Each structure stands twice: as structure tokens, then as C-alpha cells.
Length: 377
Ligand code: MG
Ligand code: ZN
Image (cartoon, rainbow, N blue to C red; front, side, top):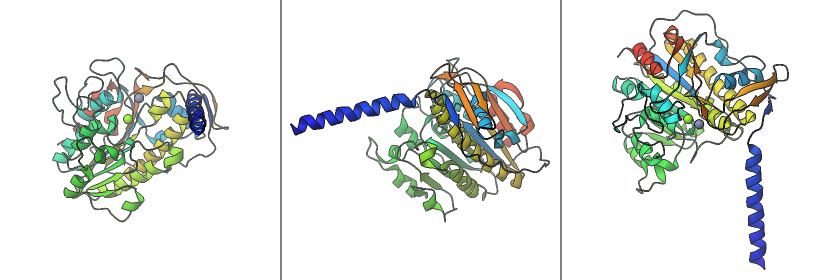
């Protein structure tokens, strides 16, 4: 009798969970209740080439996603400060519509690979990434992500695997490059592994200080540092709070102590997930969070004067269109053509020394080439 009751409760609970998650999908409208302030930047002249590059990738962030953020923030984002604008064609080696592995790899290596591949060619051979090349040339390096740090976008800058799903192998690849700081979720890929290894121990043996929150790392600015902000992916912004802006500031604080300069990739991962869900609230809240990190990067670059900031996407997600909205109400209505990615080109915004280099329409691989030209190793 008791068991029967229990079973009914479990089935009922499953049903409720199921219908709740279905309700989560396709939410067309969002009204923002809180705008964020835009950083103030004064007009200034920059040199020809940067010492540092901050690359910010909004996963799945097309023009509609950005404009939904502009509307919901009452007409202005930090991105609006970036006056040099180009477009990136996001196709992969084997598909008209890329995934985030091939999309990330094009930007990190300058080569188009097949969907799913993490910085390896069709033969499975590793292709050097800008992060690895920067490290070899004496620059400090960093990765920040609101997903697991082993997920496709950050992975494509430091790992070499034939499939983006090889999370444990990707985690092991973090030990092969002397990356100075990385912050994101995905701790379980380092500690709960099929091979039984605890890679956080191996990180410590390599000299890393390993933390499970950004706050715990507060008094530590000496690289190398690994900060795991979640066991799996980080939760959505409502739950994770200002993790991304905190991580951005932490990483810039640590990396800027290197006199040789630095390269960092910072990802707003979940704009893409909002697109897959066809959820305007999901997209806009993640877009606004990402823009706060852009603001932190721009503020750093304006003060530093030798830092190039690039904001772009690996592809667009959702085929999002904006069918209604109001700057006064800070409201947006989204419409969607797919729950997958689309082929449309995505914007590239740049600020700082070398920003002029990034205007025009070009293939995603050119972003790598332009960044390399700016570093001039
Ligand atoms: Mg991603
Ligand atoms: Zn996606």
C-alpha cells in the first residue's frame, strides 16, 4: 500500500517536472526590470598593435540577440561603445551550419574543421591555438566561461580532441598548457573520472592554486590559478549571480601582472542555450550578463591603453527575430525559426589598438589571423 502511494507520488512528480520543462520552451516576451549602467569611456588614441587581447565570445549571439539586449537595457549596451564593426561568416569545414566546436576552433586556430572537432584537423592532428601560441611566446593566458570549462567553446582554445563530447580527455588537456588562470564549471570532469584520477591534484602538483569559488581566491593574485565555479555547468544567471563579471575582473587582475602581456577568451555560453530553448527571457538575461563582462573588459582596456577587445560569436542560435518591443518598457518580443543554430553571419566588434583591422566581411578563420597579426610573434 505504502509502496503504491510512493509510486504515485514519484510518477506525479515526474509529470510535473516534465510539463514544467516543456513550459520553459518558447517564451516570446521579456520585460527587464533592472537596467545596468554603461561604463564611461573617454575618446582616446591607441597605438597600432596591442600587448594584450581580450576576446569575448557570446555563444549563439547574433544581431537580434544583441538588439534584444539593447532594447531591454533601455537603448544602450557596453557593446555600443565599440565603433569598429565587422561580420564573420561562421561556416565549418563540412557544414553550412556550424556547431560550437568547429565555430570555436575556426576562431582559436584559423582553420575550419568538421563539426564536433576540438582544434584537430580531419586526420585528428592537433592544430595549435592562439592561446597555446601566446603561452609559448611568453604571454600570460586565461579562459573564463559560464558553462563547464571543458565545454566546446573554451575547449577549442586549449584542447585537441576529435569529439567535443570527450569531456574527461578535454580536462586532461588543461594540464598540457601552462595556462595562467581558468574559471568556469566542469569540476567533475577533473575529479569524477573513469580513469579514477583526480586532476585537481595534478594541477596542484603543477603549482596551481585550486578553488571552488571566486570569493575563496580573493587574496590570491599569483598565477597559476584554477577556479571551479560549478561541478557541471554553471546555472543560469538568476542563480549564478555576477559570476561572469567577477571572473572577468579576477582574470584580468591576475593576467595584467605579466609584463609580456596576455591573451584571454571570455565566454557568455548560455545566450546559445536561450536560443535553443526559443526563450526570450533566457536570451536577454544572458545577453545583459555578457554585456556587463564586456563593460569590465572595455574599462580595463581604456585604462590600460595597450589592450585590444574583440566581441563576437561562434554562430547565431534560434533564428531569432524581434517582432515587437519598447525601449521605454524595456520589453522585447522574440520570434524563432529553429531550435538549432543558423548560418547567418555574426558581428565582430573591436576596441583598442588594432581595432581597425576587424572591419569588413570575412570568414571566421580571419579572426584568428587578424589577432595573430596584431600579436606579431
Ligand atoms: Mg559555448
Ligand atoms: Zn548551440
